[in-house]
Length: 132
Image (tube, rainbow, N blue to C red; front, side, top):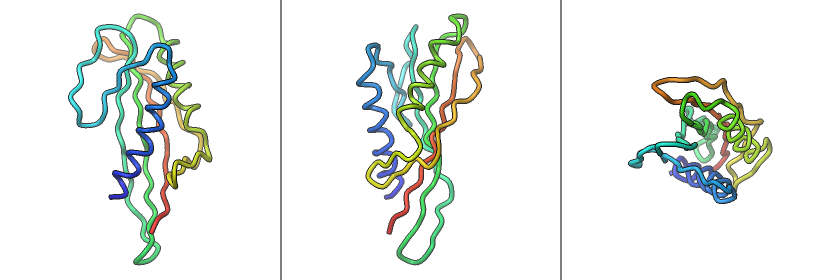
């Protein structure tokens, strides 16, 4: 139940970011059919929950990472994909509180990599929810 709530908060926040873009990148949501576009940038989203920690019978701490992979086609340079990744990271600043789902530290933008004609830059957004 908490994982669904966490997913809704994080995906809603990403949807806000997408809606603010002039060129709105398509998003491959987790476990939803998706065909990557022939050109341009697109996003792939994965929620990666960590083990839940229980402080008592009534309370728990849910932590994990919200991973947004930013894709473009290989051979078109890295700056556009890296710029989108940085912009997404900036939309989830440390201290952000989304109805109890918190971003405890700045997101990490990883090193880009190429594979099978694609260039990908990962953005890892840590989250934490303390709830009863």
